[in-house]
Length: 122
Image (cartoon, helix red, strand yellow):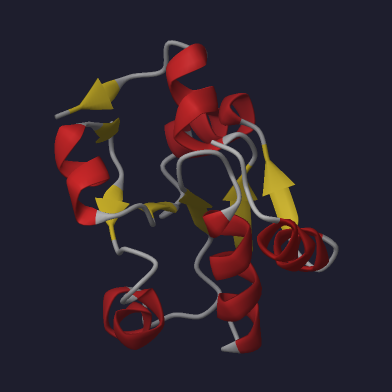
């Protein structure tokens, strides 16, 4: 998908303020079972089609409203992903502004997850 210049500028600004992890790092952290939350921020229809095994869904349109109920401890490690790592970077930036201190965006998002043949669920 070709992204607009304004969107890419916004994403790049967010990426300058957030931390990213790779799919391999995400899987390694999840294997440690340290209470890590893997959150898919894609649209409902994208989630329903398939998603990363072990993920939960809080779409970009509602995450700011619902995150404090779903993840009340703002020090919890949260790894976000979307289709390609753009929307999740925006969400990571917003969550940091809300006081979350251990937030990451998964570089490459769902595409990178699938390319790595990581486990999925439908």
